[in-house]
Amino acid sequence: MSRKPLVERVNDALALITGTHTIRCPYPGCRVSVRYRRVTPDEAKRLTGLATAHTHH
Image (tube, rainbow, N blue to C red; front, side, top):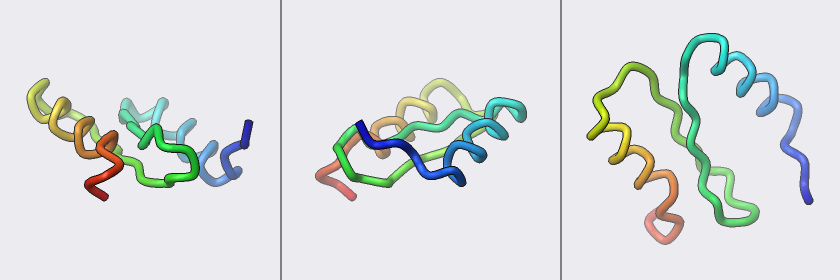
């Protein structure tokens, strides 16, 4: 299991405090992520699809 770099862990902690959601690509080694805050449910689905569609980024 690989650990996330410290910068990513700190940014994730700050995102939790500010109410931001972070979605990461589940593909091993891929560092693509999408962070959003205050979006509609439809936009959240769209952004999640972008982040998790490894073949598209």
